[in-house]
Amino acid sequence: MRNLTIGKPLKLIVLFTIPLLIGNLFQQLYSFMDALIVGRTIGKDALAAVGATSSIVFLIIGFAQGTTAGLSILTAQAYGAHDYRRVRRSFGTSIWITVGISLILTVAAVTMTRPLLTVMQTPPDIMDGSIAFVRVIYFGIIASMSFNLLSNMLRALGDSRTPLFFLIIATIINIVLDFWFILGFHSGVAGAGYATVSAQVIAALLCWIYIRMRIPLLMIRRRDLRFDWHDIVQHLKVGLPMGFQMSIIAIGAVILQVMLNTLGTNAVAAYTAAGRIDQLATLPSASFGVAMATFAAQNLGAKEYGRIRRGVYQTLMVNVGLSAVLGVVIILFSKP
View 1 (cartoon, rainbow, N blue to C red):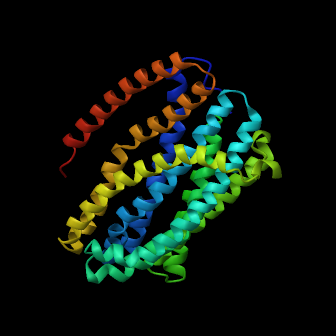
View 2 (view 1 turned 30 degrees about the vertical axis):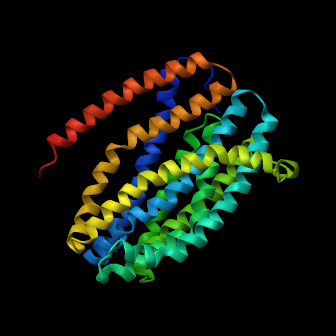
View 3 (view 1 turned 45 degrees about the vertical axis):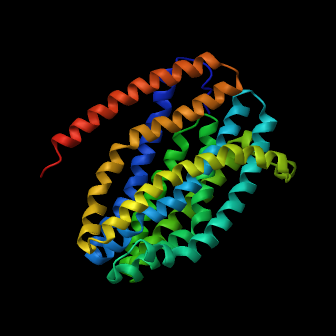
């Protein structure tokens, strides 16, 4: 655990960001390996089927991830204020919200899978594969939200390294299970989904065991799980806006996917492969954003408002400079 209310803001933020960035790279490796293994072992149509679902997966999973990140902000504020009882209460409340939202999202997303893909003009030759893959992912929403919640709780306490460790384990498991389900059980495109969900379940369980054994501050008891509407509303006021923010970004991706689908399977497959580069380029900014949210939350709890202003300004300067460099590199090396 790391106290972000003491020390040089930029140094703390950069050190906190590095594990986040590496973790985000491994998350991209998740989807990259799914696409690579599916494309190489099943074929182009299977790759296109996975690619055609990326935007609607992001629409739902992005909302879930944004919400859990928002819930942890109140936990970080309590930790910054040294109110450790409130830390546990925040964790308990976040568990209630995570279970509720994951169940609602699962029912809604699974039910709307075919209508969404139809509206998006998904090519008929990849429709069945797309449905098979995305429904498996949607049934695993609770696993994804649970792992993200537990990881974000550790980050709220200033620990960005331990979630990275479990994410690396999940990535390795995902790659192994990809081959197992696709080649061993001949599960087709759905096999990639089974591998991803299974890896997230294992990672969530390992993360929970670690918290129970090593983090006394997050060892919640029955009283910490007391259902309190006031606490739930306070957490939703922060969590839902962050979830919707991620969904709004995803809506643009959905519109783009609709236009892409009209161009046929080859265009979808090509965009799936090339789109990974754009995703990699935005990872530093996303990582700095998560780090800054945790830094600001802890310092808000400690009433260190000057540190928040300095941290925002310094991080913004670094982020702008890094983004400019990455943009130039991508343009220079964009052609084969």
